[in-house]
Image 1 (cartoon, rainbow, N blue to C red):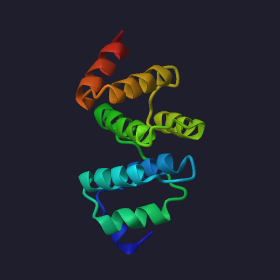
Image 2: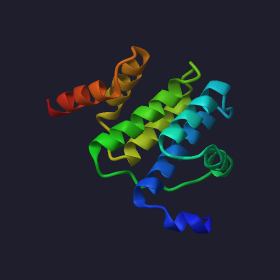
Image 3: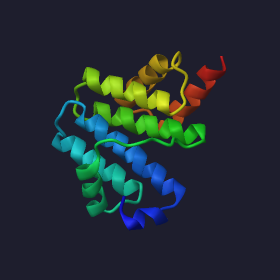
Image 4: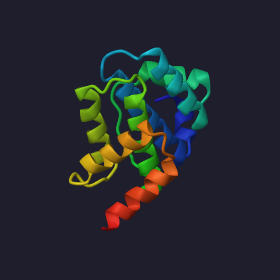
Length: 144
């Protein structure tokens, strides 16, 4: 760990861990396609990372521990981004799905709800549905 990382606030540390998961999803088929790389840079900048920080995270991401956020909305947002990354290259690989399921479990989603949650996210993203609308739909289904 670099010295400056000790001074990162908890939210930035969580964003880094989440970003590392996105990288792992992109690497699940052993290749980061150009469109996946562009999406990683766009998402990384949205999280407040600079391009050199993103490149460094791409280089150093091998193993990481994950401390999911407490808020359901933030965990949903992170899983939404992971699924979006899975769909970025237009191919859904078994390794990507295994990794995505593992991330969902680590994020605190119930194993029994994950297949339906992932289907909701995949279909919603493919249809161009808004993340907030998908989250509201998820919450409604969860309460049933």
